[in-house]
Length: 447
Image 1 (cartoon, rainbow, N blue to C red):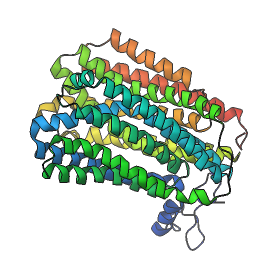
Image 2: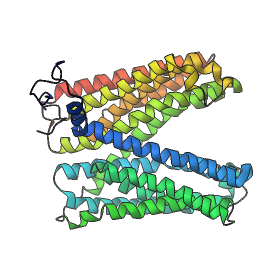
Image 3: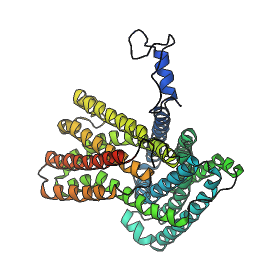
Image 4: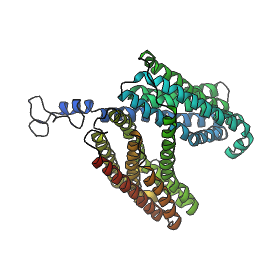
């Protein structure tokens, strides 16, 4: 039985005594156990890759801003913002690829993964082509909405969106196959290539167009790398990929999950901007950004849990231990950040400067609200990983509840934040109840 599984025996020191006892404690044995725990190990790998990619993302912003100046940087930043909005279909594509790659891996059908990726690649090409044609046809209107005069910005947006869709399907397969080192390297390659390409092209005199072209070069290189990383799948015995109808139905539920969690995650900031004064809205936005650190860290755990559960479920093996440990890990991260925000608010707010001192009393509540949302998001992804739709009603209900509560009660930052805590708390309780029911209804080994 693999170490780190729910059924694994007690950790023992070299003398044979349980590490839980004082005399038998061994730091080396504890570290070995941590290295053998797939959930912790892969979460750490994915987190490290995400942090490295994020740092390159910041360097991209700083470098293009410094080289282009405010006017040129505004063009690149506008396209980047639009790319974030356009990334939702890619998130769905990655979830679908991850789910079915994990299923095929769990059933020892690795030869079926190339067929799955062919279907998803064709779907990505068609979707990307349709989106690209639409953007090009509406280029003047889109450029006006982005407040840019150069239509090349819209063309770059169309190309980057299309390539991004292609690479997300392959990333989902890597994630479903639990190849987190390669997956993390792929993300770092993407962002590092953007930095190198942008700096080189802008220095060569390409101007803002160089920064825009870099947004296409990065994901293009990442796509080539992902093809290389998945090449060994072609040597596997051929298998039958999941039927297109099954994949399509799952994509619908994955879309609902993506839109629902994104809505709950973002709508409070938008409504705060609508109801509060500009200064108060800025304070709210600053607190929300700091609170979202919990959600980001929680997502690294979700990214590892999903394929683990999907694979175990496909083998009809126990998977609840993985979910329980994931919940505990996310809750622990959230609790640590809440305590940190309470104990060291000045350090936390240092990047914003003294003008954001008014955020101080709201730091811990923001962290608590985002911890609750991170726990709910984990459970939404649990149900997605086993192909269940029982998350839909609580998630849709939370979207409606949060919007209604903030629309009715928005007298200041504190009141809106209270409504967010109530909404995310209700969602967590509802999702927890559904999960508990699922846990009680299933035998020890999942059906």
